[in-house]
Length: 389
Image 1 (tube, rainbow, N blue to C red):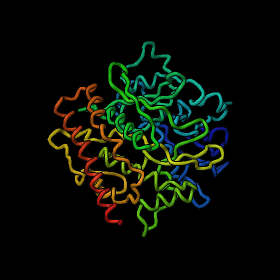
Image 2: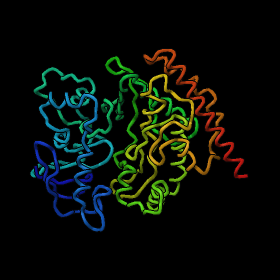
Image 3: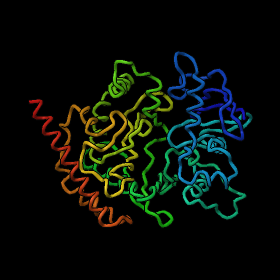
Image 4: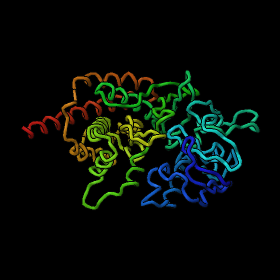
């Protein structure tokens, strides 16, 4: 399929995509190089490998629960093959592909202001095809949704919400998203609000899309692809320097707040694709740090009861250090942190977990672990402030 990669209404580059596999075969000379995806245009040249990588990672990852069965039902070989069926449209950015010879307009097909089919989302989420599958509608942002958990986009009261499930054996992520959202609210940390709802009889988390028709998410991974890390600079300091270079003057403060949150909730999966920056898709001006999202893989969500730890030292972390005890040392300012706002947070977590199917013993262990992590952080901050004096 010959097409043009578009950035909203701006033509960016001609592409040749294999119809069967969805793989990017060839690309032409950039029409508007400044609008190429971040990290794919280096030193006035298109990096073909990075462009192919960007396109491939736009698709549903192979690790998604139930994806193999979904592709078999749709008779599609690879998840990339779903991209062109919905023009590569997403609810995370403003890129899409316009097939050669088709007179398509962004204003008529984008998912921010137009409705979309729930066929793909329902199939990915439940594993069941709707009746009369011959009329299956592929036009959905679910073809470009990231992550391993079952999820789907849904329009609720005119707003775009991402509905996410949990993973076996505990399906704890949905409750962790909600409690992390509450901690952020209590500590005045910019975040995406998560609520609890039921979908097909299953407890799920739901969050409203923080990307608007004018903005887009650029992951930390893409920013680091654009600005290679010098050998003598840590990735942490380099990422902050990148943000400052792009005009985000409060990036250090916002990243430090993220690290504090991740310490409290023992987040084990803050990888470079679930935090980043926002930019204006038309002017390309950088507008700020992405509000915190995707905190489900925390609070020992996949650990058996016997190994739930109350020690800060042992909890694994990402992305800058391998343990939270080491990573929290990157934070230089705790003046904004008000521990009193967290006094009853374990009670809130306990009430929340009552809606789960977790046994009483595990719920008690998790609430104690949360309390202990807050106490560990409080002790560290106290020692940190005393050392400064």
